[in-house]
Length: 396
Ligand code: MG
Image (tube, rainbow, N blue to C red; front, top):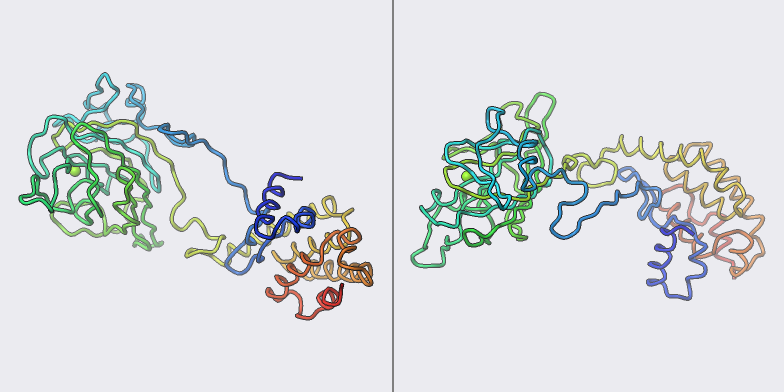
């Protein structure tokens, strides 16, 4: 028995009761509503592609992350440069922290990224000086264009009178600079590291370069949600309203801003993620019915190719079930004919059997077959009250 089959059986046993376990263990892995116009896969489909296993242990970057800065001079030299593509003059301290240097300019990754999950840790200068935008100012730039503000906002508190460090809200730490303030202000004290976990989606463009879907950004600031799928108006600007230029960039470097204050950075990693519209075969907002159909046809063809080897010697009920299952992905006349032939064979075997004898003689339980014929009926592949349903209805 496959591990997935064991897991599925156990889950169902919890729901259905241990008494049902014996029949469920022998049941098919087709557990839910079949593919349809917007979904290439059945619910709980065990033919759906598996999920890549990674490790994500504690404070270490996930195993599939690209480490951009790990505290070593090598990671700095390999991955970062200044605005002219030269080695940066930012300093690396003995603790492995990268420190912004006034006048050295911002630093940028050599590699360009688009949609990503980005982890950055930063600390405002321990020696506090200045106010508002002049206190511990830096920033994380996505695609070189969109700034999530880094700023010492520890003392900024509008509930205090007077506010110890007043500032404009769309420019404090965690803001989409000039566009949207953070939902709350969880900034830690100067010298204490903060974390940004940023999920960024690049804008999606039409063929003519206009913006079909804006860039979006979600930010967890010290684990707290401060930006929730914010749709960006355009690249970051100072004092002015922004909008997207014609044909905005679709990839760019990650940047860390030099705003004249010695902000510290450490532990920077990134994971490239699919664009907003990548998921086109699993339902949801961007479902593309032509791609769904393409995937369904490919799945049916693959299952056809392995049908005889996998099910050739199975009992007729199980074989019938699998024939129908293939047909749910792509009900061609040949597949419907195969299912119809197996249905006739099943009816001749099952006629006169009791429900108790059905699994042993036909390889499937009455309950499971009833469930699957319910799916087929709902999908319009069999008529209500068909011969199998009628037989099962009479079966004791
Ligand atoms: Mg800034």
